[in-house]
Length: 318
Image (cartoon, rainbow, N blue to C red; front, side, top):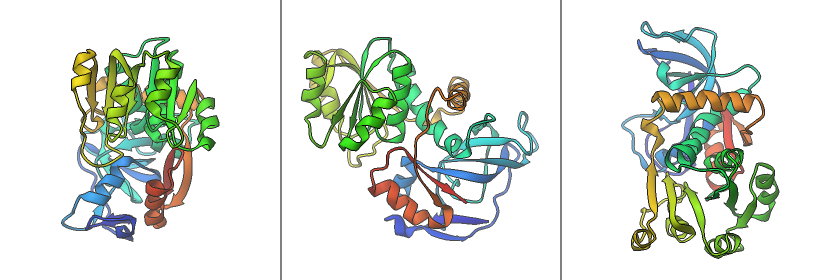
């Protein structure tokens, strides 16, 4: 099979498009003929910072058609369209993944959208609902609202009846975020985020802040109301996660950390992905695709995902 691989971490140029042995379908796995690959934030972090002993197929997320199933697998069959999550291997023509980390793609949903949905939308749902305890009419601030998790969080929070304040850079993104459910969009490049949140909330602050950036944690805390909740997920901004917790203690605020990699096989999370896929099929949720590349141009695709500030996910097609 063809795959995009790297051995030594670094910039997108470390990725090469090469022939690799076809993956072996283990007893608990399904083998997928990949049709669409979603570039996730973790893919970029791994490629930048994680050395490998030999050429390594990077990638967390893809969708395609099952071409083989393991001996112990039930509930999956050759010919089914599925989307999948695993910790590596999606940047390839073939991908062997545990069957428990796959979801059926509903008829009527495109494969690019199916590939990009599970990680971003399930993460947003877990942050908002499971950890964040979002209630109707509350005010939620979404940092990095133009990213995959951010776009999902804006839509899910709006559907739950919340007032959504989206944070994004660049005025051109404002209209799209408003279309997707934001009540207000703060341009972080032109405005002071904390001052604007406090102004929009009459000095109270937000009931809930979702922060997938990491480097914005201190601002997120400062924009939070007394007894508010901050959910931080990932570290898209890079660097250390540092924050002064004295303010949070004085204001009786709650901080939740979320790492979804260990949660996708939990029945409640897996079931949520199925419901979100159905919602996307029915056009109740929109999976925003910024741009599509060929897998042979993986280095260019990674560079675009990393430097172009895309609105939504970047997808590759084998």
